[in-house]
Amino acid sequence: MLHVYTAVLFTRCGNIITVHSLSVYAKPVLPNWSCLPAPTCFCHHLLKCKTTIIRCLKPNFVKLPGIFDVDYVAVQLRHSGILETIHIRKEGFPIRIQYPCFIQRYGFLLNTQSSHLSEIELSVNLLNLVDAEERQYQLGRTKVFLKEFLYQKLEDKWSSTQTWAAVTIQRNIRGFLCRRNFKFFKQKAIVIQSHIRGHQASRTDNPWSETGRQWEYGPWPVRGAEEVQDIDRRKAGGGGRTGLH
Image (cartoon, rainbow, N blue to C red):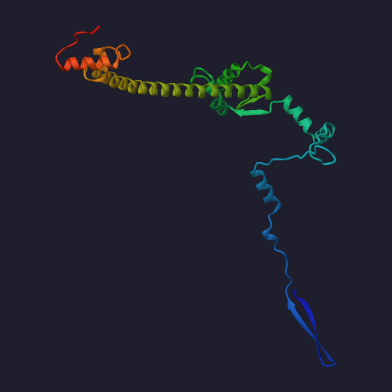
């Protein structure tokens, strides 16, 4: 099917106006619906993704910052069905974990690993660590069903154990580094002390050193400078230490 498009042109030459008509035959341009996704394809991609539904709540009906209307928010929660969802989640077993994943995450809480026990028995032993009651969990064929309160107790136990293990590792490493540094500085201090004591001993054994003069003649405050000079003159003349009091 062809569409006819007619164009009219007007030309003027002086006082004479000429009308020209032009006809064009063309096929209509239709939209390409094949490039658009089909509803089935859209649903297929939607099922493959992890869909998250976000519900927006208004803090107040005037849309002003810093104002939180409790009654207005509670009405929105009640009408959106969130309160009923929370109640159902609280009454049921919302946490559902497969046995291998459950044992892999919380298995280290057991002091001894028993390879002869089944996955269900290991799961029961883990639940007994946090004093779980029978009404707080259910054991299925492939999964363990937990209430929210029991799941939080397991997570707290897991977090405290991980923290204790990290602190223990840090304490041992810091103790090792401190002991190593103490031994290193102790050896260096012993070497420095030995050199200082040897230097002091060599100065004391030399009678012509300042320390030797003090040892021979006594401390400087006891004998005056003139007396020391007199002692030096006597020694130079061979008088020795005669006449000293």
